[in-house]
Amino acid sequence: MAHGSVLEDERRPGGKVERALTVFLTGAECPFTCSFCDLWQWTLDGPTPPGALTRQLESVLEARDGQARDGQTPDRLKLYNASNFFDQRAVPSEDVLGIAKLAAPFAAITVESHANTIGAKTLEFARQIPGQLEVAVGLETIHPAAAAQLNKRLDLARFDTAARFLSDNGIDLRVFVLLGAPYVPVDETVGWTVRAVEYAVERGASVVSIIPVRGGNGEMERLQGLGHFTPPTLLQLEESLDLSLQFTKAVVTADLWDVDRLPACEHCRAERVERLRRVNVSGRSESRVSCGSCGAE
Image 1 (cartoon, rainbow, N blue to C red):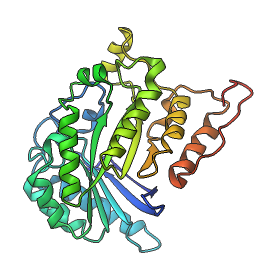
Image 2: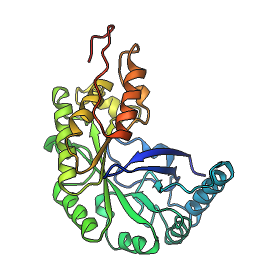
Image 3: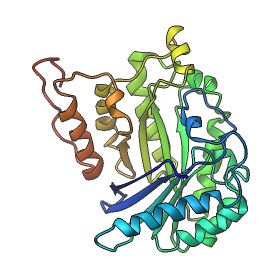
């Protein structure tokens, strides 16, 4: 079964605010095993059984239809399967067709993929859905030393090729950028995050999401013990987002999944998180929170 879903407002380029339904599907584990990733916790040991993802999505949509009071279909359907949508092992052909049919009522569909799996199957799925396709791709970092250590097997040339392919075929690009990538010096964390956001925007990203690296997968704790990783803070996430609002050609947001795990002053944490939520939706800069306890602004 799907391991969760969430309905939320999401800003798009041009200022429109969409209603987006995100469904977290359970399927095969991603073969790239990036060092920072903890999504394997919500995957299967073997290939995704044919029909499993279609049934999961169908179940979530039926439950939502039963609970919805307004009777309106959200603008966007986001499907995150903790792997690569265009990998046959993760999303069998039967499910691609089934998902396309279930996604028909939505004006836009977002799926996730490693840059290396973007190609013919991406175009095929784009033709099967009536809505606008968007592919979410992890750029993570452009710090040379850090990028080489992530086990992602992605260089900037390959990312650029995937970005051009999507653009040339009228498919939107969403990009994930890390805050606190291992091997990035802690005093350079924010700077390299903002540079990665700028890099993604320059290559046509419509949306860029800044994702703080989470511990808990074992590898991050090992790297922290070796001095190669320092958990990012809530203040760093704020600063990264504030500095990235200058890139107005795209929507830049702070990912607030598990935001309560970020180190922060407990006196001003809640107010800072609410500020980030507002900025995510509005795209407008706000005055930073002043705190008498920690002195941070």
